[in-house]
Length: 105
Image 1 (cartoon, rainbow, N blue to C red):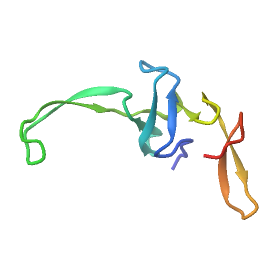
Image 2 (image 1 turned 60 degrees about the horizontal axis):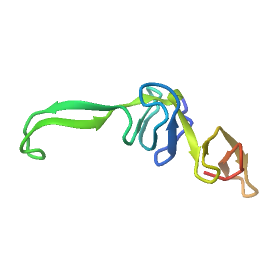
Image 3 (image 1 turned 180 degrees about the vertical axis):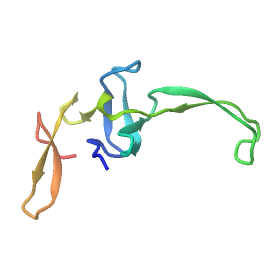
């Protein structure tokens, strides 16, 4: 299974596509397709039938997935998008680190 450079809960910046420049939190990661769903990005209209959960039905706006290569991790400490480095701590655990300021994610 391919690895994705972001995890659920990360803040990311969209760097390509129709929503370029938007920031949002990763809601879901789909590693098999190398895609992510970001809050408030790539909104699509879905037509739903009335059911138990949604009595009225109608058109619902929801987020669709975008390719993981179109998002970049956003560092809250230095307030800019960044690449990540991996660092192994003294206790043997592996953490993700900001390339600019050294902050751990």
